[in-house]
Length: 131
Image (cartoon, rainbow, N blue to C red; front, side):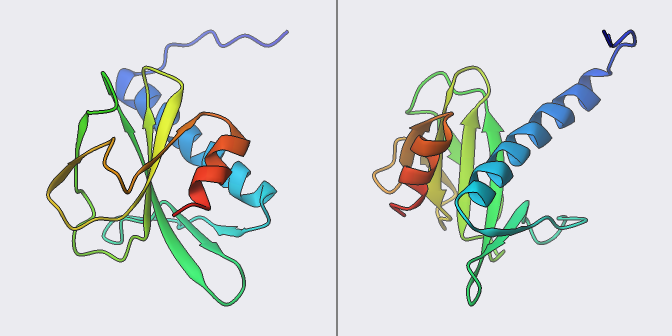
């Protein structure tokens, strides 16, 4: 059976974990019938995932946070970009939040416009479609 015998550097390991959350969202959206595109480089455009239903395109940013609770405050890291949706995952738990991109500098995760989900495809898609 294959076993990893090398150490992964902490920064590399964090990047791998963050990418795994993006891959989870990609998988869920593809299973829902969306066309999914991954930018080769998202610097400057703040877009991790681009989705389309054919005529329309939407930009998605995926973020992970160490949230101690739903009232955790997040910072707007995409101001001035064309991001449509931000998906937050609590790294230290099994839940996340789908939020429309906002102009405020900060917002709590439990803001009324945000939709909480457990890390499950059906729950994610149900909340995603509520935006």
